[in-house]
Figure 1 (cartoon, rainbow over the protein chains, first blue to last red):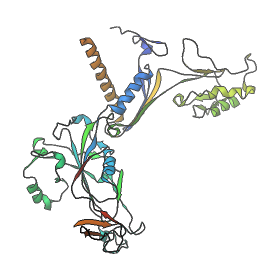
Figure 2 (figure 1 turned 90 degrees about the vertical axis):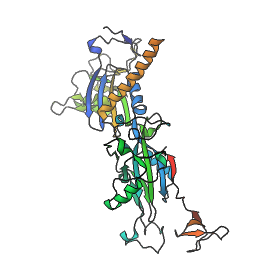
Figure 3 (figure 1 turned 180 degrees about the vertical axis):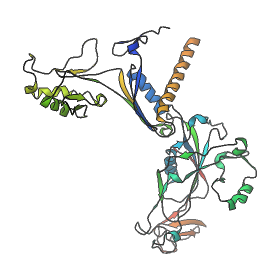
Figure 4 (figure 1 turned 135 degrees about the vertical axis):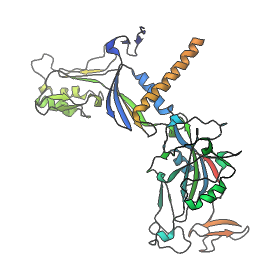
Length: 383
Length: 45
């Protein structure tokens, strides 16, 4: 089926039926957490829409409900809760459902965690020089004890019959020793454990190594948290990307072989090292086009050094080409180098926080964008 | 009888209503009320 041509912003026609105008993707970096690729054949508004979807509409799990049972730290409850919300929850969001106000917490829509830091035992630190009962004794005597996200432990979700999960203060931590097992069994009488209905609920990790707070001797923390599915649109903690961005890649073209001082001048003029000298032949080459920022310095620099221009050429000065009427692209050009803006050639870069693999994220964004477009099309067709 | 913590030495003690506000350990006059033991629920935002 022939698709209709599209008029791009710079006035050019994009004909999807033409082979050379099809979208091309070439991977430039491919890791678990980061991916970047060159895209050509699409224009900026489309890529921007995908970037916005990545930031705001690809769902993840993040800590939302925090119940502080005990906090004798200097850091107040809400400050600590805010930091907990920003800890990445490394669960696959596609396995969970959104939880609405009216929904009961369940293993399908909630992940439960516990942060329990008991007060530090003075016996463990004989070097502390303290009189009895003292908590603060100056920085030298009592160093503060850091609390890292490593201490956040997954907990099996428990729902008390007839009671909201949030108000339960007794958690059955899977890490209790066997001596507490009997006590635990008594405590769970009358509780409808989520484990009864869902046989295998996998433990979930959070990102380790995040400093949450610091405690002094004698202080303790006992916090229960629930993570739910959400969107970056609602709060940035739910954004799956550390960031995602795209930038335009200009076309940098060298006219012929340039050597010697001319080559060195052009290479040195570029602040972002687009050019390099070929080792064997001593000629100038384009090392990395994607670094180019279209500053035009590689062209303008020859105005400072007219002696390098070929004296045989009638036109002794480098020139900036004025944009033509029908062509809205910026072009810097002289007899040796031309740098041209390409309005349909970009590098797209995605860094994942950890809930998704970076290469999967772009596909998720495309799927979400596609469903948005489909919804509108259907509404239009039903009109 | 409510529990307080001394601002200078960190001693935890109890004070009665209408009692003079001071630490019984170091006689410092700056005391803080201890955080409640009741669970507090908040949103991590």
